[in-house]
Image (spheres, rainbow, N blue to C red):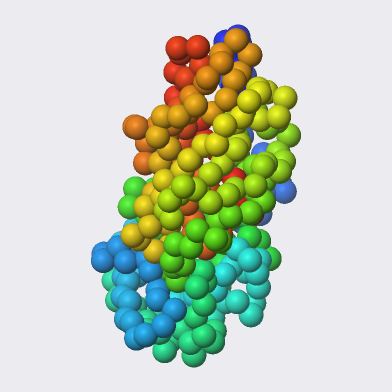
Length: 304
Protein backbone atom coordinates (compact mmCIF):
# COMPACT_ATOMS: atom_id res chain seq x y z
CA UNK A 1 0.00 0.00 0.00
CA UNK A 2 1.30 3.44 -0.93
CA UNK A 3 2.86 5.25 2.02
CA UNK A 4 2.11 8.98 2.30
CA UNK A 5 5.30 10.83 3.28
CA UNK A 6 5.72 14.60 3.67
CA UNK A 7 9.32 15.36 2.61
CA UNK A 8 11.48 18.07 4.12
CA UNK A 9 13.05 19.99 1.22
CA UNK A 10 16.30 21.84 1.82
CA UNK A 11 17.48 24.21 -0.92
CA UNK A 12 21.23 24.71 -1.31
CA UNK A 13 22.69 27.55 -3.35
CA UNK A 14 25.60 26.37 -5.51
CA UNK A 15 25.77 29.17 -8.06
CA UNK A 16 29.56 29.51 -7.97
CA UNK A 17 30.14 25.96 -9.25
CA UNK A 18 27.54 26.24 -11.99
CA UNK A 19 27.94 29.56 -13.78
CA UNK A 20 31.56 29.04 -14.80
CA UNK A 21 31.03 25.85 -16.83
CA UNK A 22 32.30 26.51 -20.36
CA UNK A 23 33.79 24.37 -23.08
CA UNK A 24 37.13 26.19 -22.68
CA UNK A 25 37.31 25.00 -19.07
CA UNK A 26 36.95 21.33 -20.07
CA UNK A 27 39.64 20.09 -22.48
CA UNK A 28 38.03 16.63 -22.56
CA UNK A 29 34.91 17.99 -24.28
CA UNK A 30 35.25 17.18 -28.00
CA UNK A 31 34.20 19.31 -30.96
CA UNK A 32 30.51 20.20 -31.15
CA UNK A 33 28.73 19.33 -34.41
CA UNK A 34 25.51 20.99 -35.51
CA UNK A 35 23.09 18.40 -36.91
CA UNK A 36 19.92 19.32 -38.84
CA UNK A 37 16.81 18.21 -37.03
CA UNK A 38 14.47 16.13 -39.17
CA UNK A 39 10.74 15.79 -38.60
CA UNK A 40 8.65 12.79 -39.71
CA UNK A 41 4.91 13.41 -39.91
CA UNK A 42 2.00 11.11 -40.73
CA UNK A 43 -0.96 13.44 -41.26
CA UNK A 44 -3.32 10.48 -41.63
CA UNK A 45 -2.29 9.31 -38.15
CA UNK A 46 -2.50 5.73 -39.40
CA UNK A 47 0.08 3.70 -37.47
CA UNK A 48 -1.12 0.23 -38.42
CA UNK A 49 0.29 -2.19 -41.00
CA UNK A 50 -1.82 -5.28 -41.79
CA UNK A 51 0.03 -8.57 -42.01
CA UNK A 52 -1.87 -9.60 -45.14
CA UNK A 53 -3.32 -7.84 -48.19
CA UNK A 54 -2.12 -4.81 -50.12
CA UNK A 55 -1.60 -1.46 -48.39
CA UNK A 56 0.03 1.91 -49.01
CA UNK A 57 1.31 4.32 -46.36
CA UNK A 58 2.68 7.85 -46.79
CA UNK A 59 4.49 10.15 -44.37
CA UNK A 60 6.35 13.43 -44.78
CA UNK A 61 10.00 14.15 -44.03
CA UNK A 62 10.72 17.81 -43.35
CA UNK A 63 13.23 20.11 -41.63
CA UNK A 64 12.30 21.16 -38.11
CA UNK A 65 14.46 24.26 -38.53
CA UNK A 66 13.98 25.38 -42.14
CA UNK A 67 17.37 27.11 -42.47
CA UNK A 68 19.39 24.11 -41.23
CA UNK A 69 19.69 22.01 -44.38
CA UNK A 70 21.68 18.76 -44.75
CA UNK A 71 23.54 17.75 -47.89
CA UNK A 72 21.17 14.78 -48.20
CA UNK A 73 19.36 12.15 -46.16
CA UNK A 74 18.59 8.46 -46.51
CA UNK A 75 15.23 7.33 -45.17
CA UNK A 76 15.79 4.13 -43.21
CA UNK A 77 13.52 1.61 -41.54
CA UNK A 78 14.23 -0.84 -38.74
CA UNK A 79 12.22 -3.97 -37.97
CA UNK A 80 11.65 -4.85 -34.31
CA UNK A 81 14.57 -2.70 -33.23
CA UNK A 82 13.94 -3.01 -29.50
CA UNK A 83 14.11 -6.80 -29.84
CA UNK A 84 17.24 -6.82 -32.00
CA UNK A 85 19.19 -3.98 -30.30
CA UNK A 86 19.04 -2.10 -33.60
CA UNK A 87 21.45 -4.49 -35.29
CA UNK A 88 22.89 -3.70 -38.73
CA UNK A 89 20.76 -6.48 -40.23
CA UNK A 90 17.57 -4.97 -38.82
CA UNK A 91 18.13 -1.51 -40.41
CA UNK A 92 17.45 -1.06 -44.15
CA UNK A 93 17.46 1.92 -46.52
CA UNK A 94 14.00 2.65 -47.90
CA UNK A 95 14.86 5.73 -50.00
CA UNK A 96 18.35 7.17 -50.48
CA UNK A 97 19.64 10.59 -51.52
CA UNK A 98 16.69 12.80 -50.55
CA UNK A 99 17.62 16.49 -50.97
CA UNK A 100 14.25 18.27 -51.19
CA UNK A 101 12.17 19.15 -48.14
CA UNK A 102 9.42 18.55 -47.37
CA UNK A 103 9.31 15.20 -49.20
CA UNK A 104 6.53 12.62 -49.12
CA UNK A 105 7.75 9.05 -48.55
CA UNK A 106 5.43 6.28 -49.68
CA UNK A 107 5.86 2.60 -48.88
CA UNK A 108 3.74 -0.48 -49.52
CA UNK A 109 3.49 -4.04 -48.28
CA UNK A 110 5.75 -4.98 -51.21
CA UNK A 111 8.36 -2.44 -50.02
CA UNK A 112 8.42 -3.97 -46.55
CA UNK A 113 8.45 -7.58 -47.74
CA UNK A 114 11.30 -6.85 -50.18
CA UNK A 115 13.38 -5.41 -47.34
CA UNK A 116 12.57 -7.79 -44.49
CA UNK A 117 10.47 -10.69 -45.70
CA UNK A 118 6.90 -11.50 -44.62
CA UNK A 119 5.10 -9.25 -42.14
CA UNK A 120 4.06 -10.98 -38.92
CA UNK A 121 1.52 -9.90 -36.34
CA UNK A 122 3.23 -7.83 -33.68
CA UNK A 123 6.07 -6.61 -35.93
CA UNK A 124 7.08 -2.97 -35.39
CA UNK A 125 8.65 -0.91 -38.19
CA UNK A 126 10.35 2.35 -37.15
CA UNK A 127 11.32 4.93 -39.77
CA UNK A 128 14.10 7.47 -39.32
CA UNK A 129 16.80 9.19 -41.38
CA UNK A 130 20.55 8.92 -41.86
CA UNK A 131 21.77 12.49 -42.28
CA UNK A 132 24.71 13.48 -44.49
CA UNK A 133 26.04 16.87 -43.40
CA UNK A 134 27.38 19.46 -45.83
CA UNK A 135 30.94 18.34 -44.97
CA UNK A 136 30.13 14.70 -45.80
CA UNK A 137 29.81 13.43 -42.23
CA UNK A 138 27.05 10.83 -41.85
CA UNK A 139 24.87 10.89 -38.73
CA UNK A 140 22.93 7.59 -38.35
CA UNK A 141 19.23 7.65 -37.65
CA UNK A 142 19.48 4.68 -35.26
CA UNK A 143 22.24 3.66 -32.87
CA UNK A 144 23.24 0.05 -33.42
CA UNK A 145 23.36 -1.98 -30.23
CA UNK A 146 21.25 0.34 -28.07
CA UNK A 147 17.63 -0.61 -27.42
CA UNK A 148 17.42 1.58 -24.32
CA UNK A 149 16.60 4.71 -26.34
CA UNK A 150 13.16 3.28 -27.19
CA UNK A 151 13.48 4.39 -30.77
CA UNK A 152 17.25 4.22 -30.98
CA UNK A 153 17.52 7.57 -32.74
CA UNK A 154 20.89 9.27 -32.63
CA UNK A 155 19.46 12.61 -31.46
CA UNK A 156 18.71 11.29 -27.98
CA UNK A 157 15.42 11.01 -26.11
CA UNK A 158 14.82 14.70 -25.31
CA UNK A 159 14.58 15.81 -28.97
CA UNK A 160 11.12 14.27 -29.31
CA UNK A 161 9.90 16.59 -26.53
CA UNK A 162 10.21 19.65 -28.78
CA UNK A 163 6.75 20.90 -29.85
CA UNK A 164 5.61 19.03 -32.95
CA UNK A 165 8.91 17.16 -33.35
CA UNK A 166 8.97 13.46 -34.30
CA UNK A 167 12.42 12.17 -35.32
CA UNK A 168 11.16 8.58 -35.56
CA UNK A 169 7.78 7.36 -36.74
CA UNK A 170 6.60 3.82 -36.02
CA UNK A 171 4.04 1.51 -37.63
CA UNK A 172 2.87 -1.72 -36.08
CA UNK A 173 1.28 -4.86 -37.44
CA UNK A 174 -1.48 -5.25 -34.86
CA UNK A 175 -2.64 -8.36 -33.11
CA UNK A 176 -6.36 -9.01 -32.76
CA UNK A 177 -7.82 -9.52 -29.30
CA UNK A 178 -7.49 -13.07 -28.04
CA UNK A 179 -8.40 -13.74 -24.42
CA UNK A 180 -6.23 -16.87 -24.28
CA UNK A 181 -3.06 -14.86 -25.10
CA UNK A 182 -3.61 -12.74 -21.98
CA UNK A 183 -4.04 -15.71 -19.64
CA UNK A 184 -0.97 -16.92 -17.77
CA UNK A 185 1.82 -15.94 -15.39
CA UNK A 186 2.83 -12.28 -15.10
CA UNK A 187 5.46 -10.19 -13.35
CA UNK A 188 5.18 -6.67 -11.97
CA UNK A 189 6.83 -3.96 -14.06
CA UNK A 190 5.40 -0.93 -12.25
CA UNK A 191 3.51 -0.77 -8.97
CA UNK A 192 2.83 2.79 -7.80
CA UNK A 193 0.66 1.45 -4.98
CA UNK A 194 3.80 -0.27 -3.61
CA UNK A 195 2.43 -3.64 -2.61
CA UNK A 196 5.33 -5.13 -4.58
CA UNK A 197 8.57 -3.44 -3.50
CA UNK A 198 11.69 -4.69 -5.27
CA UNK A 199 10.59 -5.21 -8.87
CA UNK A 200 9.97 -7.37 -10.80
CA UNK A 201 8.09 -10.00 -8.82
CA UNK A 202 5.64 -12.63 -10.01
CA UNK A 203 1.96 -12.13 -9.34
CA UNK A 204 -0.85 -14.69 -9.27
CA UNK A 205 -1.77 -15.82 -12.80
CA UNK A 206 -4.21 -13.84 -14.93
CA UNK A 207 -7.27 -15.96 -15.72
CA UNK A 208 -10.28 -15.69 -17.98
CA UNK A 209 -13.00 -13.27 -16.91
CA UNK A 210 -16.76 -13.89 -16.73
CA UNK A 211 -17.19 -12.61 -20.31
CA UNK A 212 -15.13 -13.09 -23.47
CA UNK A 213 -13.89 -9.47 -23.30
CA UNK A 214 -12.81 -9.71 -19.65
CA UNK A 215 -9.86 -11.03 -17.67
CA UNK A 216 -9.42 -11.63 -13.94
CA UNK A 217 -6.49 -10.32 -11.87
CA UNK A 218 -5.53 -11.09 -8.26
CA UNK A 219 -2.80 -8.47 -7.90
CA UNK A 220 -4.04 -6.50 -4.89
CA UNK A 221 -3.66 -6.75 -1.99
CA UNK A 222 -0.14 -8.03 -2.55
CA UNK A 223 1.22 -10.79 -0.35
CA UNK A 224 2.17 -9.28 3.01
CA UNK A 225 0.40 -6.00 2.31
CA UNK A 226 -3.13 -7.21 2.93
CA UNK A 227 -5.37 -10.27 3.12
CA UNK A 228 -8.47 -11.84 1.60
CA UNK A 229 -7.60 -10.85 -2.01
CA UNK A 230 -10.60 -10.87 -4.31
CA UNK A 231 -10.76 -11.17 -8.13
CA UNK A 232 -10.43 -7.85 -9.96
CA UNK A 233 -12.31 -7.97 -13.27
CA UNK A 234 -10.83 -5.98 -16.17
CA UNK A 235 -13.09 -5.20 -19.13
CA UNK A 236 -11.34 -4.69 -22.47
CA UNK A 237 -12.41 -2.80 -25.59
CA UNK A 238 -11.78 -5.41 -28.28
CA UNK A 239 -12.94 -3.45 -31.33
CA UNK A 240 -9.54 -1.97 -32.20
CA UNK A 241 -6.64 -4.21 -33.14
CA UNK A 242 -3.29 -3.88 -31.38
CA UNK A 243 -4.20 -2.17 -28.12
CA UNK A 244 -7.54 -2.02 -26.36
CA UNK A 245 -8.71 0.40 -23.69
CA UNK A 246 -9.26 -1.28 -20.33
CA UNK A 247 -11.50 -0.46 -17.40
CA UNK A 248 -12.15 -1.74 -13.89
CA UNK A 249 -15.54 -1.03 -12.36
CA UNK A 250 -15.56 -0.22 -8.64
CA UNK A 251 -15.19 -3.55 -6.83
CA UNK A 252 -13.91 -5.00 -3.56
CA UNK A 253 -10.36 -6.30 -3.94
CA UNK A 254 -9.60 -7.39 -0.36
CA UNK A 255 -8.67 -6.21 3.11
CA UNK A 256 -5.86 -3.84 4.08
CA UNK A 257 -4.91 -3.27 7.75
CA UNK A 258 -7.69 -1.19 9.27
CA UNK A 259 -9.53 -1.10 5.93
CA UNK A 260 -11.64 -4.19 5.26
CA UNK A 261 -13.47 -4.41 1.94
CA UNK A 262 -11.10 -2.00 0.20
CA UNK A 263 -12.06 -1.21 -3.38
CA UNK A 264 -10.31 -0.34 -6.63
CA UNK A 265 -11.39 1.07 -9.97
CA UNK A 266 -9.75 2.65 -12.99
CA UNK A 267 -9.26 6.40 -12.68
CA UNK A 268 -12.17 8.16 -14.36
CA UNK A 269 -9.97 11.15 -15.21
CA UNK A 270 -7.32 9.07 -17.02
CA UNK A 271 -7.20 7.35 -20.41
CA UNK A 272 -4.00 5.47 -19.57
CA UNK A 273 -5.50 2.03 -18.94
CA UNK A 274 -4.96 -0.45 -21.77
CA UNK A 275 -4.08 -4.00 -22.78
CA UNK A 276 -1.57 -4.78 -25.54
CA UNK A 277 -2.93 -7.71 -27.54
CA UNK A 278 0.50 -8.66 -28.91
CA UNK A 279 2.73 -8.56 -25.84
CA UNK A 280 0.04 -9.25 -23.25
CA UNK A 281 1.02 -6.12 -21.29
CA UNK A 282 -1.71 -4.98 -18.89
CA UNK A 283 -1.45 -1.32 -17.85
CA UNK A 284 -4.00 0.11 -15.42
CA UNK A 285 -4.30 3.56 -13.85
CA UNK A 286 -6.13 2.79 -10.61
CA UNK A 287 -7.87 4.58 -7.76
CA UNK A 288 -8.03 2.82 -4.37
CA UNK A 289 -10.54 3.49 -1.59
CA UNK A 290 -9.55 2.44 1.92
CA UNK A 291 -11.75 3.14 4.96
CA UNK A 292 -13.68 5.83 3.11
CA UNK A 293 -10.64 7.67 1.69
CA UNK A 294 -9.85 7.53 -2.03
CA UNK A 295 -6.27 7.63 -3.35
CA UNK A 296 -6.08 8.40 -7.07
CA UNK A 297 -3.74 7.78 -9.98
CA UNK A 298 -1.63 4.70 -9.19
CA UNK A 299 -0.24 2.87 -12.22
CA UNK A 300 -0.06 -0.91 -12.24
CA UNK A 301 1.80 -2.46 -15.17
CA UNK A 302 2.28 -6.22 -15.52
CA UNK A 303 3.62 -8.29 -18.40
CA UNK A 304 4.39 -11.91 -19.31
